[in-house]
Each structure stands twice: as C-alpha cells, then as structure tokens.
Length: 82
Image (cartoon, rainbow, N blue to C red; front, side):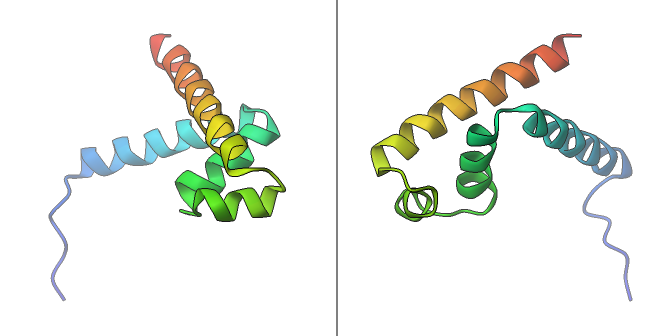
C-alpha cells in the first residue's frame, strides 16, 4: 500500500488547527446561529429543509444564516487578530 503524499505534514497540521478554532468559535455562538450554520454549511441541508426542521420560513432561514455567518466571521477575525 502506498502512502498518500498529496498533503504536506504542515498543511495537515494547519488544517487540524483551523478546524479546532472554528469548532470552538462555533460553540460560542448563540444556539440559534449554531443550529442554522450546522444544518446549512456543515450538513448541507437546503434552505427549505432547514426551515422545516427549525419551524421557520425560508426567508427567516436565509436571514438568520447570513447573520450567523457574519457573527462567525467576526468571532474568527477577533481570534486571529490576537
């Protein structure tokens, strides 16, 4: 069996560290933001399905998703500015 050398070890380390930072930051967001981000951006659920699961309208899901992404981006920006 051949080893996969397509990724360098330093890239793998940075990728794991970045995932850990995102996971911690996501965990600090309000639950309603975290839920919509997980459904849409991690699980790949459609807006319509997310609306059904959350008992929201599609318009509400889109709006909350935008605000959740902005909150995550702001939190990550603050983290990396340290």
